[in-house]
Image 1 (cartoon, one colour):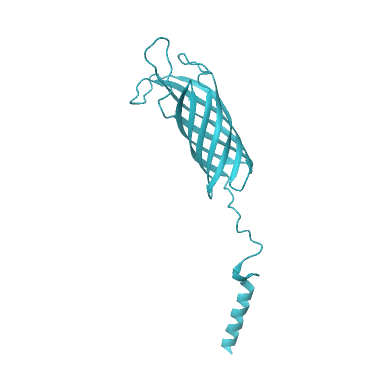
Image 2 (cartoon, one colour; image 1 turned 135 degrees about the vertical axis):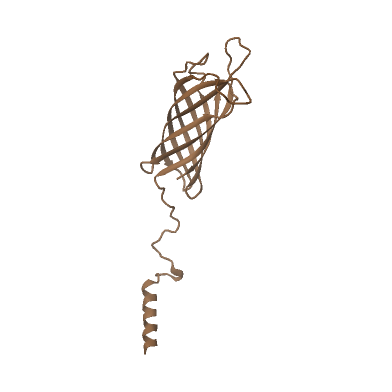
Length: 202
């Protein structure tokens, strides 16, 4: 009799917890649903910047948060890594290379296109220091004071979701600099086109 009761209990428990379809599939569950972003993002960026006819490579990082599905606000920090952007000082035979680091606020308005592709309108507002170096073997500042400048970078990005919570972003931006007063450099000298790639985790 006890065996019959045990078999009956097992049968009832199996019936209660079983799904409506074979294989334990829940018809109301969305198995293709992506994990929701945690509201924060962080990543690394590499920028190719064109200034005064030369190209340089800037490296930096980004971090911030999402207010909703469309708007994100954060901060960026960047440094001109290469020593390939030069300028002349009147008739001097020496052509110093440009040194530049900057940081500031960044905002994006995101527009989904497909499940794994989205685009965004971008605006960065930065403050940074312009300086110079004269040695190609060691990147040492030749002028301790330098010149603090302001710059704006409007542009657009395209994000490709590689795996869960990790995206690759490709972008075009234009940098417009203000307040440049260093040696013979002007605002136009430090304004130019930027293409970049970013690796973002969300």
